Every structure is written in C-alpha cells, then in structure tokens.
Amino acid sequence: MNRRQAYEAAERRRSLTIAGISTVVVILAIMFLVPLAPGWPQVKASFFDGAVFADTFPTLLKAFMIDVMIFAWSVPIILVLGLAIALARGAQAPALFPLRIFGAVYVDVFRGVPVVLTIYLIGFGVPGLGLPRPWNSPYIWGTVALVLTYSAYVAEVLRSGIESIHASQRNAAICLGLNERDTMRYVILPQAIRRVVPANMNMLVALQKDVALLSFIGPVEILRQAGIYKSLLANFTPYVVAAVIFLLVTVPATRYADYLLNRDRNARS
Figure 1: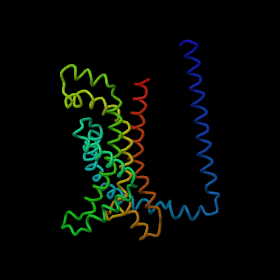
Figure 2: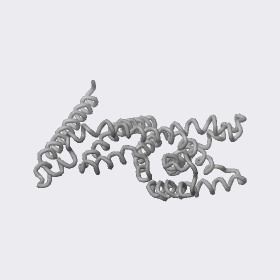
Figure 3: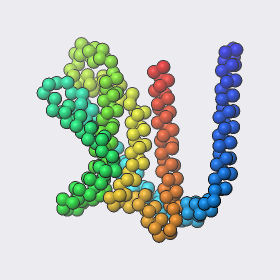
Figure 4: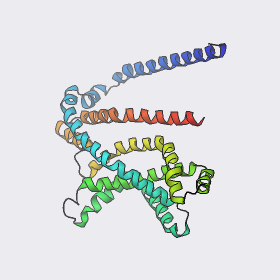
C-alpha cells in the first residue's frame, strides 16, 4: 500500500467512525428524550401495544398478500403499456403524428392527476355504469387506475432511455441494412431498457406502497384490515404492524434499487 492509498484508507476509517458515533448519539437521544414527553405513556399504549401487535400480525400479513397479488398482475401490464406509450411518443413518421399527440395527452393527464383521485374516479365511476359481475369489481378497476397512472411514469422513464442512445447507433444500424423496426428492436431498446432499470425499480417500489390506496374503494387489503382492527380494538397499533410489514418488503427493494443506481453511475464514470 502506497502513501496515497494509506491516506485514503485512514480517511475512510475516520468518516466511518464519525458516522457511527453520530448515529449512536442520535438513537440514544431519541430513546431517552421521547419517553420524557408528557404524552408518551398514552402514545405508547395507543401505538405500541405488544399484545395487539402479536394478535393482529398474522391476519395483517395474510391481508398483505392481496397487495402483493395486485402488484404482481399490475407490473407486466404497466411495463407493456408504458413501452407502447413511449414508442408512440417517439414516433417520427408524419402519418403517426396522432399517436404522438395521444401519447403526450396520456402522459400529461395521468401524471397530472393524483393517483388517489384516479382511483376514486375509476373505482367508483366505472362500476357506477351498472356493469354485471365480475366487471364491477373494485379489484379490477383499482388495478386499472394504478396501471393507467404508473404506465404514464414508466413511459417517460423509457422514453428518456430511448433518447439517451446516440443517434450514430441508429444511423449505423440503418447503414447495415436494418429497417426502423429492427433498429429499434435489436439496437435501441436493449440498451435503453438496461439503462432505465434502476429508475423503474424505484417506480415499482412506489407502486407497491400505492397499492394500499385501493382500500379506499373497497378491497380488504392490509390498510383496510388495519383500519378494521383499529375500530374494533380502539388502538392504533395495527397501523404500526402494517407499516412494519411494508418496510420488510420495501426497504430491501429500495436498497437494491440504490445498488443498481450506484452500479450504473460507476459504469458511466
């Protein structure tokens, strides 16, 4: 190890030591100062009741599986629709100009309206048309609302990836004899999709959390089940249980998205 490497290693150790000490100080301050608040006994009884936590955890975990199922069948549809919208927005042929307009309007509308408002409008509006079962199911129309909203965001992420590919690669592919369709399929899209994987991972983490918003239109998933327990037990601990279950899923996913972002950043540097 030369002097430069030894200096950098010492600086890393110093930074880690300072970060560790400051973290411990903050945690100890929270542990000692929060219980000194005058309302802490009531808050502890209302939000951190161990018996309620243990009793409600299994049922809430089972209800969370509904969120997972809605997430699982929404993701493929969002990716396919998002790609279609991204390609429509990037269409260059004059005859496809209406598609470009449609893509722009679609993205503007569904990125501009809050997701919870879209869920309300579609989840209550469409079943109000008097559709027969199962087409009046809140699961179906709640999923449609999520797909419409998140496909607009994913479309913009994919479009940014497509536009990040240098024009010389497109020109080179055409010079080699590929038509526009094959150039997009074999040259542009594989690179563009790889570049936007980290950004789309963050979108999927947000989608996993927003699935809970469907509880507003009827499905008894984890948030609605926690609300039922809160009313029955007159205690907010079920909401804490729901938060813990979400964290068990979203924190690893977020860390993985950060890892992908860092890897992509290092590869570009």
